[in-house]
Amino acid sequence: MIVVHDNSYSEICFDGYRAPSLLETPGAKEVGVEILSLSKGWNMTGWRTGLMAGNADVVERYRHLKTNLDSGMFDALQRATAVALLDAADFPREMSSVYERRRDLVVEALRAIGLAVEPPRATPYIWTRVPAGYTSGSFAETVLERAYVVVSPGSAYGPSGEGFFRISLTVADDRLEEAVRRIETSLQSGILSR
Ligand SMILES: *Cc1c(COP(=O)(O)O)cnc(C)c1O
Image (tube, rainbow, N blue to C red; front, side, top):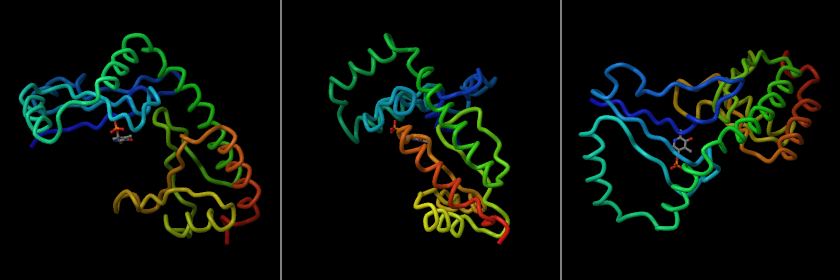
């Protein structure tokens, strides 16, 4: 068995926090690999560029598999990725401050409707418990019907996600502000203690 750490948000961190890498753990390279992506930190979603590092044998087997599945990425994407890593290494920090501001906006709104939200130190998502009396599904439905805002039911990510919901911060500021306003105005009036 090998450990494959999908570390797509490694660069998106808040309040000076630095997210750990699997590979800092002693012995990690004996048992696994880490996968990093430029999708989130560099706003290159859909470009499918990233890297795998760690156990040499696993990396080699993956390389072998990959060369049988497809044959090299469009050259311009590879070059753009190199430029992003070499000349725009600080860009994820800028993105992190954008997400940090959006996080604060959403956390404030959820607290205003009575939810005890723990602000995340990393990731472009808010993941938190639904209020008492709701399932993931019924809460997502209520938010949709009352505020016309889509939140993801935690149960969509597997059985352990039941009882939680997720809000993505990858939405433009003005739309997120609108969503937050609607949540505050349409869910405040006693909905959480029905
Ligand atoms: C975005 C994302 C991916 C996809 O990464 P790509 O580099 O865009 O293929 C994989 N895992 C997680 C957890 C993600 O959020």
